[in-house]
Image 1 (spheres, rainbow, N blue to C red):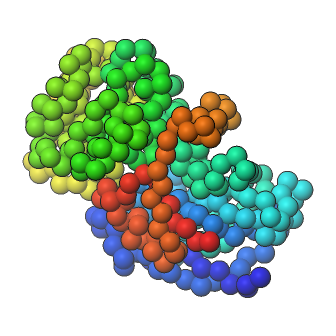
Image 2: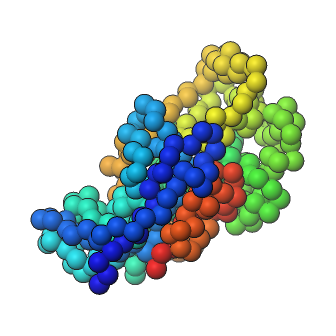
Length: 341
C-alpha cells in the first residue's frame, strides 16, 4: 500500500467562472483510520454544479470550502482498511471523500454499495444524489398528475433526464430543453421525452418561449428548475394557474451572469402571484431520509433498463478541474464522473 495520496485543493476563490488558477493538485500523506473509521481508495468521484457555490466565501446552506482545503464532493471506492465492524476490506462504499485519491471517514457516515446490483459509479448519479434530487423534487413538490405537462432544462443531465423519465412513467407530457441537437436527440430517443428544444438555437427568452408554447399547447403545469437564466424567463409566462416549480439549482447564474440594467424580479413576482404558483426551493441533503424509498422504487428500474442513464467519464484526478469547468458550461452529456481506478 502506498503511503501517499493525491488531492485537489481550492487554491484561490474564483471571480466569475472558475479557472485553472483556482485549483491545485497536491501529494499528501495517506491518512490512517481511527477508531470506528474506514480508509477508502476512491475509484470514481462526482462533479456537480453545487460545488461552484462552495468555492465562494458566501453565506449559504453549507460552509464554503476553505482555501487550501480539499474540494468537496461525493465519491465511491474500495475499503482498504477498516476499524469498524460495519465494513471490511474489499467492500465498496460511498462517502463525501472530496476530490482525492483516498479518504477516511467514520463508517457510520458511509453508504455500503453492492457492485453486483449496479455499477458503483451509479451511486454518484442515477442512484445517488442527482437521482434522488429528481425523484424527491418531482414527487414531493411537483406532485405530478396524469395528463399534465412538465418542462425541465438540462434534459440529458443526471437530474433532468431522471425527471423526464419519472414524469413519463406517471403519464405526463415531458418537454426537455438542452444545449445542441445531439443532446436533444438523446433526450427524446434515450430518455423518452416527448420533445426537446435546443436553447442554443434560440438567442433570447422570447424566441425560446415561442418554441415552448408550440410544444406545450395546454400550458406548463410543472417546471423543474435547475438552470435559471433565459429558460426561466421563457417558462414563467406559460405556467398554468396552480403550477408548481421545484427549485433545486440555477446554474446559469452561479458564476455571476450579467443582467445589464434589467430587473427580472417584478415580472417573476407578478407571474407567481397571478398564476398562483407554488415555488419551493429545496436542498437535497435535507431529504436524504427518503433515500431508501427512492432506491426501492428506482433501483429495480435501473437494473431492468426501464430507467436509462448516461455517464460522462473523465480519467485522472488531475483532469477533474477541466471536467468541472466544462460541465458548468454545459459541456457534459450525462452525469459528470472522474475515474481514478
